[in-house]
Image (tube, rainbow, N blue to C red; front, side, top):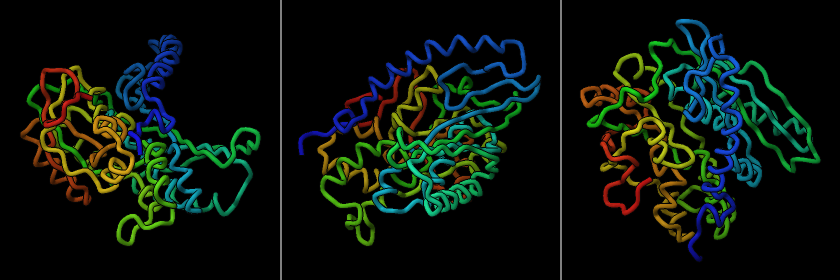
Amino acid sequence: MDKMTYAKAGVNIDREALAIRALVGEIKHTLDFRKGKAGESLLGVGHFAALISLDAERTLALSADGVGTKILVAEAMQRYDTIGIDLIAMNANDVICVGAEPMVLVDYIAIYEPDENIMEEIGKGLVKGAKTAGISIVGGETATLPEIVKGFDIAGLILGFVDRDKIVTGKSILPGDVVIGLASSGIHSNGLTLARKVIFSEYKPEDEIFPGRKAGEELLEPTRIYVREVLECLAGADVRGLANITGGGLGNLARITDYGFLLDNLPEPHRIFKLIQELGNVPENEMYRTFNMGIGLCIVAGREDAEKIIGICKKYHTEAKIIGSVVREKGVAIKGKDFVL
């Protein structure tokens, strides 16, 4: 196969960034509409979650997201009981990045035609994800849109809470701080357009690609939810920054500070990433800016708190280790690689 990239697969993240910039350029003017009142934006636009004032002591955090083309894998496998877990994870993992505890979710499902069996299976995943994240699902909307959607799409919005004096923005990060990487469960819910194009060009969804593991099953592995361990770390350690490693890969670290990062102790990428790179002849820099490559969330802290944080994660069966440190040079550099994210 010729070299495959995310853009060739159908998602041009550079053009997407320009489009988002154009949208944000307009909507940022609305931030003044609640200035000085409850509902005032405290972070602006661009962090992992929005923070809005409630009163002098309390703030609310909001995050909205979907699960992308992972839905197409679920349809190919006729298995819908994990998509709900991904939906909770993609939103809850963003909300905790500002130090907030996720509380409630509302969902939106657009569907070609109502199917009670599919909806029941989606519901099972939502319940499982909600239990892990410790949230309630308090409502939502289902729209039948045969002229717009061919299958279905699902999105959600999570509301969280954090006291003003416990907000985590990354402003306290300093050079020399360590980056603790929390292991991902696999591909999570980003880069599936590229992953599907590569994997399904060589295998059918039901084909075994690893011993006892079908291609579709590997791509459907649910996104890990990090809420419990992160909340305990926030309560018991000096957490200075949090980054959800989603679209953009480890480059997401650059969103939380003007300093840079040197990652010199990354784990070996999951076998699914190695297979995608090999089958698609995907350039290494493309892999690292598209996928999580084995790290699903990063905690930035002082070195003195690193072992405490790693120990807390271990309690929740989440593998964690120091993967690098904060440096003065901007960007996210990976030791041994000739690119900067």
